[in-house]
Every structure is written in structure tokens, then in C-alpha cells.
Image 1 (cartoon, rainbow over the protein chains, first blue to last red):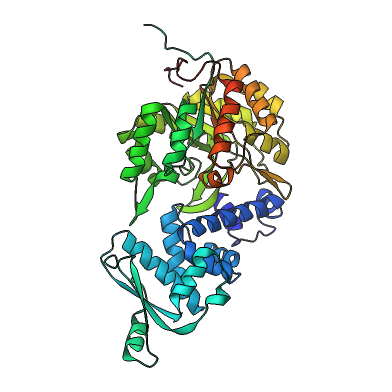
Image 2 (cartoon, rainbow over the protein chains, first blue to last red):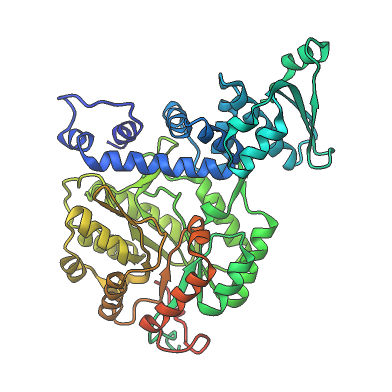
Length: 186
Length: 299
């Protein structure tokens, strides 16, 4: 029964007439919908705490709730905020929206270096990063800051403030090389 | 041998979510007990769970001024395939480093086959579940050597057809294991609202001498459900119910704990939290802080 309830909660199980009456009763109950809503709210809240920039970027794109919902349905999740947050950032760094992907990669790199990782990380941006990050931190609309261009942020614990931004001239070898490397290590 | 001292009235406690020294400084003069949740305080790195030096220093600060008790959410004592071992790893570390008067958890489960549900679900009250939970309670009592308390959780899903009433099940647990109970007065109100629990009948049936702690909390009403969010100051009805439980338990209740989520602290503010504790104290505690005698007997 616990497995069935888990799967009902995750929207991955639809009872049939052969299922026990209790499971069918739960499936039809407003309580199940309430439980699902609470779980989504709570996980969104945790991700907003741990992945503040990425969550804010998703919020600015009006897709935070649906993104968290899809993320939580697709996998078994940890109760620990660090593990939940890292799994989420790993997922978001592959996002088809390049801005969201860059923010997630940047945030993941920042968390790693703040924890003492010696490795440096390079993140590719299609928008000027300072403006984007300022808007995310201040909760301002992103539209005002989306200045297109080719940029890189280098994230390292050896850089004052942990990161620096550089513009990449279009067509430069550096930009192509960086594109191939702009993924955070697993 | 002289009998252990028994409190004339409960002490006052509150929850503390960690990492807020300014709040802790304001709480400690107002309460005799501080309740911490290992799940909120622990950090994980590369699959290992532990407590930072700063967190342990805070725990030492607390135990210098108050009695430390632990109340977790992640044990999942009711999971059919076994409880959460990582929760026990957290408890092991805490018990090694600080003095804990007792620890507690919920009569529920939050994990299935190692997967975290994101919430707690209550258990069917059957003989099979009773056997399973009692075995685990006895193991916990042996492992840590201090009292263990169980709290009933609220239920939002339909009730399962059960062999026991809610009170009857708790009575069976305490009779078989000697464990203590936490009664959450607001949870009882939630169950009355959401599930039609008859609180009077519940209290009449429950063996109240096992109730060691009462929780006070408040939450929200959302889409026809009353939810225990631990986000507000206590309602008068909840205080009145808690007073009734204390009176009927005849000295068994050792602490009344005001529960507040760490996430709710910024919205409420320190002053409101302080005023809340000052408001609650005269309802439950007869003597000024520092002059009570605390119970030392086991649950």
C-alpha cells in the first residue's frame, strides 16, 4: 500500500477497478490533491532557498512551479536540501533556454567553489551576466537586463568575489573553445 | 532511594532552527527547553551527513542555559521496508556531542523504498503496524538510553479502516514499549476539522500519563483543509485545549513547546516570537524561570 500511495502522490499511478477500495478512495480524494500541492510548495520553497538565482530566473520566466513539478515527478528525491538543490541545478544546466542554463551552471559552480573545490569553472553566457545577476538578486524583471552578446564567467575560489566576467569577441577561437567546455563537471 | 523530583507544572520550550544567534539570544532567557530538529541542522556533503562546527557550538550554547530535546521529521519509523538510517546517523552524532534529555519523532512515514515522499503519511492502525513500530521503538530506546516520544501526525488522506482507534493505538504503543507521547494540540484541532476527530473522546480514551510533551502551533486554512504549517502565533482555542490536556495529565506533562518553522521567523519577527513566549508562559508554567524543579524520571 505504501508503494501505491507514493506513486499516487507522484502522479505516476492511476488506480483501476482491480485496486483495493482504499487506494481508489485516496485517488479520488481532495486530500490527495492537497498533499501533492503541499509537497510541491515545500520543495519549491527549499529550492528557492538553496538555488536562489536559478529559482529566481525560473520565476522571472514564469515557469518555476511547472519546472519543479516536472523535476520532482521524474526522480527519487533526497530529503536533504543540499542534495535536492544539487540535483536540481544539474538538471537545470541542460535547460533549452540558454539563459536559464547559464544561471544554473553559474550557481552550481559558485556553490562548489564556496565549499572549497579547487577546480575553476567556465560558464558561457549569451547575455551580459552582471545585468542578469543584478536583476536576479534584486528581484527585478529580467527583460530590462537581457543584453545579448558572448560572455564567459570564470568561477574560482582564487578569484576575489569568486568570479570574473569577460566579453568574448564574436567569432573568436576562445568562444568556440569555451562553448565546448561550458559544462560543469559531474 | 529518594524518588526523582516531579514538576508541579510543565516547563516552557520552543523550537530553534539553527543559524540565528540573535534569535537564540532572545529565546534562551524565556524558556527552559529548546527543541531542535536534526534534519534542519544537518548538512550533507558527498553523501555524508553531519553537523558543522558552528551548529555544534550553538548546541553547546543552548545546553549551557536550557535543556536540549530533539524532535525529528526524517526517521520514517513507519516505512514498511525500514526506517531512515541517515536519520540515525544524525542522531548518533548529536548524542555523542551534546546532552539530550529525550528525543521524539512522528508516528508516520516519509520514505518508501528509500525515496523521500516530501511529506509524512499516517499509518493504518493494525496489529502488523503495531508490531513493527513497537519493535523499532524498543530498538531506539536501547540504542540511545534516553526516553523516546512519539507524536501523532495529522492526516489529510482518507482514514484507513483500522483495528484500533487513534487513542487505542497510542495506548497499545505506550503499554508495550513504555515510550512517551507528544500531543500536538493544534494537530488535534486539525484532525477534528479535517477528519471529524472527536477530541473529547480521544482524550477520554488516551492514557494521558504517557504524555510528556505538548506542542503548540498554528497554521493556515487552505482549500477547506486546516494545515499545521507552524507559521503563526497560537490560537486561543489551541491554548485552551493544551491547558485541558495538562490538567487531565496530572503532572505527567514536562514541557509545553511552541513550534515555529525557521522559514516563518522573518515574517513573524523576533519581537512577536518573544511576546508569544511571554504570552504562553503564564498559561502553563507556575514558577518563574529558574525556580522550577525539573523531572528526572524516565518516560
